[in-house]
Length: 192
Image (cartoon, rainbow, N blue to C red):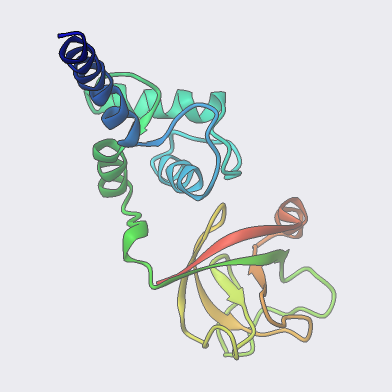
C-alpha cells in the first residue's frame, strides 16, 4: 500500500512538472539569454524598425522592449520572451528567414568607404562602391554570392582587397565616418 501511494505521488509530480518543461523548451530567446538566436531576433526586430540597439546576441532590456512592442503590435500576449510561433511570425513580417541560409560563418568584418586612402568608387568587379558591397576572399566566398551579415544587413560579394584573406571581409559604407563607426568586429555571415 505504501509503495502504491509513493508511486502515485511521483506520477502526479511528474505530470505537474511536465507542462513547465514543455513550455520552457519552446522558448527561443528570453531576457538574459545569449547567442546566435538572439542575434537573429535582434536582426528581425531591427528590420522591422523596432530595435535600434547593436546586434550583439545579448537579450537585454532593449531587446525585451522591442519584443514586447512587436507582441503588442501583432496582438500577441506581451511576455517579452520569444517562443517558436513568435519567432516564425517575426521572420515572416521582417522577410528574414534564417532557416533558408546554406551556410553560416563567423568572420572578421571591417568597414571601408570610397573616402579611404587607396579606395575608389569602382570595385574590382566593375560595380559602383555603395553600401551592400562586400569585399571577400574569392577562394572562400565566390564573387556574386549573396550574403546576410549580422548588424549590417544584406550584401553581395563584389570586391576583393589585398588584406582580405580567409575569414575576413570588408563591408562598404558610403561615408568614412560610418565605416570607422563600424570598425572591426566578429559577425555571423549567412550565405544565401
